[in-house]
Each structure stands twice: as structure tokens, then as C-alpha cells.
Length: 160
Image: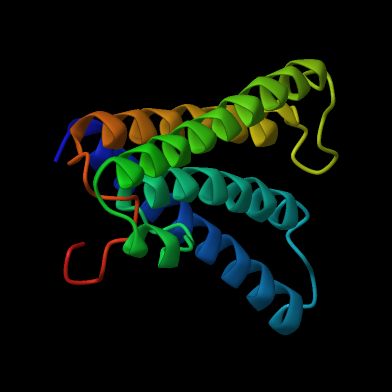
């Protein structure tokens, strides 16, 4: 497993653990100690956004995004190769468009500050371009490493 895959998995585990701890601590404080951690909601929001976009990259790597595979199952030969190429190009084009516009938005909001944590909203928004870069990396890696005859279909639990 390449280093980037290990790093991504480790980050996702750390983010999920951190988010769970923050939310649990805030629930404990709110209901048992009658006060809230003023920074907990924003921190959980930041972690959830990062979890979403890094998790989306992992889903691209694992081919676990939702797909309609009834059509590729009916195709073969050159038709299947053309269909798979179109599928890959559309996926990568969508990721590139999201990367482009999310980078613009991230750059434009760099002066906005979150009220409780007093950190720039860029910390939240930059998760999208970074996630898109990782998604694009994995999409390109899949496109160049896979058998031309195989359509993009999700892996089964046995394959993961």
C-alpha cells in the first residue's frame, strides 16, 4: 500500500476519533455539567467537512461510490472500453470542475473568521480542494492501472 494511502487512512481515523471525542465531551458537559464547550460545535463541523472530503477520496480509491452497473454488465469489447473511457473522463472532469471552483471560494474567504474558534474559514473550505486533488490522484491511478476490459464497478467487501 503506497504511503499516501496509509496517510489518508490514518488521517481519517484520527479525524473520526477527534470528532467523536469532541462531540461526546460536549454532550457530557451540556447534559451533566450544565454548560457547553463554546468551541465544540465549530470544531466538530471542521472535522466533519474534512472527514467528508478525505473520505470521498478514499471512496474513489476503493471504488465504493454509488454506480449504476447494469449497462456495463451488458457491454463487451470495444463498446465496453469506450463506455469505461467516457465514464472515467466524466468523473475526472467533474472532480476538476469542483477543484477549480472550490479553490476560488477557498481563496476568497480567507479573511472570514469563525466566531468561536477564531480560525479562518479557509481551514474548513480547503478540505474540498485537497479532497479533490486526492480524488483526482486516485481516479488517474485507477485509469492507468486497471484492465481496459473492466468497467468501473465498486469493490465487494471481499476485495477490500
